[in-house]
Amino acid sequence: MVDTVTPAQACRIAGCTLPDIRRWARAGVVRTPGVTTRYSFRDLVVLRLAAGLAAAGLRPAAVARALDAIANEVGDALTGVRVVVAGNSVLVCADDGALVDALRGGQLAFVLPAGALADEVEASVRAFSDDRTAFLAQLEPGEPGRSAGTRGSG
Image 1 (tube, rainbow, N blue to C red):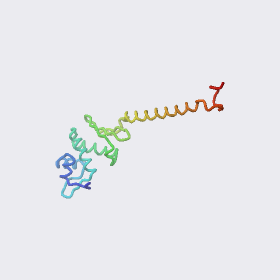
Image 2: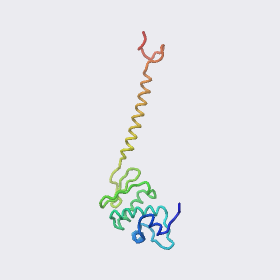
Image 3: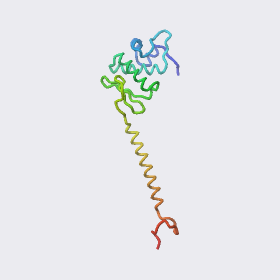
């Protein structure tokens, strides 16, 4: 994989234009494109995210605020978040289940992944069933001559 790319290559990969990158650079999202400017993989992810936020109708200043809030929330772990644009809100859902409004700040809620919860419940039920079976097996009468119970003696 290539370590860095030129601004023109970044546009092609991130799905944006040089004027977009210049606009986002003025807003503080990325470095200003120039002859010697090179963009890293992380820069490309930020540019692609910026392009998505802009396509959802956010102005460059709002894109910059949202990306800044996302960086504050998750650091460099951009691949571990989901971003949802809902009207004037940019919601960031991190791997820990916290849901944060990137433009207004502050935690809104926790997201509970029902599929993962169902898997946990299924594993608990299976473990309970195994424990129950083992317990019942211990209650069964033992070999003749054993004093485990009085059933079967006669």
